[in-house]
Length: 278
Image 1: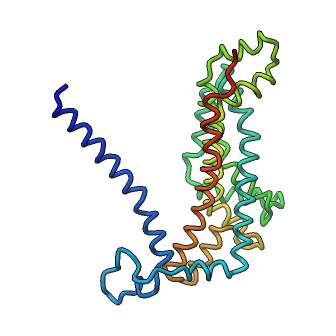
Image 2: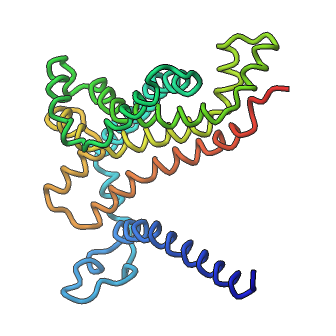
Image 3: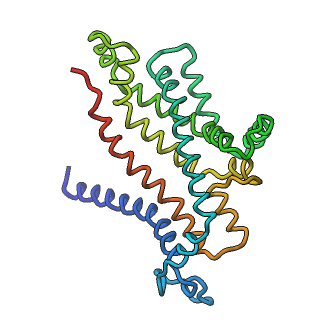
C-alpha cells in the first residue's frame, strides 16, 4: 500500500473523529453556554448572539438552587431511576441468562418479539398502560412510575444481557461444574462477572431511560404531588422562562447520568478479566 493511500486513510479517519466530536460536543457547549449566559448575551436586540457570553454568570444556578421544589424533584428522579435499574436487572438478568445459555424452543421468536415491543412509540402505549395502572391504583405513586419505567427498560436489559451471556464460552461453565461448583455457584462466580460489562451497559441505559423519561411520567404523575425533573422542566417551560433557565435545568439533568456512567465504568473494565477459572 502506497504512502499516499495511507495518508489519505488517516486523514479520512481523523476527519471522521473530528466530525463525531463536534456532533457530540456542540450540544453540550450550547447547554453550558446558555446556562451561564447573562441577559444581554441572549436578548441582543437583533444583533448576532455571541459565541460566548459577554459576562458569564452563575446567577441562574443560584436561582435554581434557591427553589426548594428543585431538590425534591431531583431526589424523586434519582430514587425512581435507581429503583428502575434494580428492578430491571433483578428481572432481566435471570431471563437473559436462560435465553442466552439454553436453546429453548421458540427462543429467537420470543427474543425478536420482546425487542419489537420497543419499536412502537411510547405515546401509542401510554394510554392503555395508564388506564391499567389507574385500575390498580398505581397512578400518582412511586411504585407505579417505577413499574412503568421497568416496562420500558426491561426489553433492552434482556436483549443486552442475552448478548453478554452468549459471548461467554460454555467451557468455562462446564469446567466449574467438573470442579464441584453448582449451576448457581457457576452463575454467580463465573458467568455474572464475565457478563458484567454488558450488564453494566444495560444498567446505564435503564438509568438514562428512567431519568430522562417524560411521557409516562406526565400521564402517571402529571396531576399528583410526585414530580420528576422532566416534569419540573415542562412546568418551567409553561411559564416561558428564558433560555438560560432551560439550559441550566438541562445541565442538571445531564450531570447525574455522567456521574452514574463514570462510577460504573470501573466495573465494566473489571468484568473483562474477573471470573476466569483455572
